[in-house]
Amino acid sequence: MIRHIVLFKFKSGCDWSDPRALAAEESSRQVGTEVPGLRSWVTGRNLSDRDIAYDFAAVGVVEDQAALDRYLDHPFHQESARRWREISDWVIADIHEPA
Image (cartoon, rainbow, N blue to C red; front, side, top):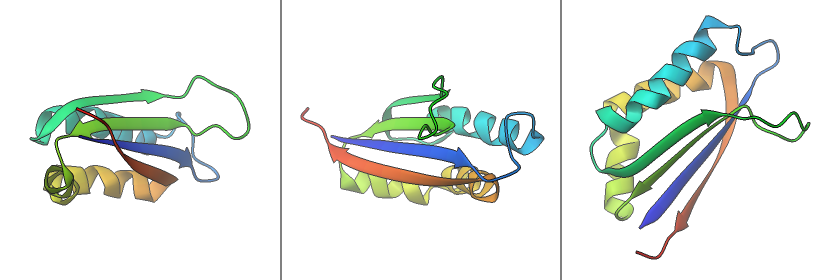
C-alpha cells in the first residue's frame, strides 16, 4: 500500500476567512467519496500555531502505484488540486506502507 500525504500552506494574504480556502477545504473532503480506489481518506485543518506548521493536510491510502496514478489523474482530484494551487503552496510524500 501507499500512503499519500499532502500538506498545504496558504500563500501570503490568504487564510481561513477567504471563501476560496473554504471551497478548497470542502473539495478536499469530497475527494474521499468522489475518487474511487482510495482505501482511506482523511483531511483536516492544522491545530498547531508553530511557524513551520502547514495549514491543511490530506492523507490517503491506495493499494499500489497504479491506484495512485488513477487517483492523481482523476478529474475531481485535478479540480481540487486546482483550487489549492490558487491559494497555497504544498508538499507531498508518498510512502510505502506494509499491508
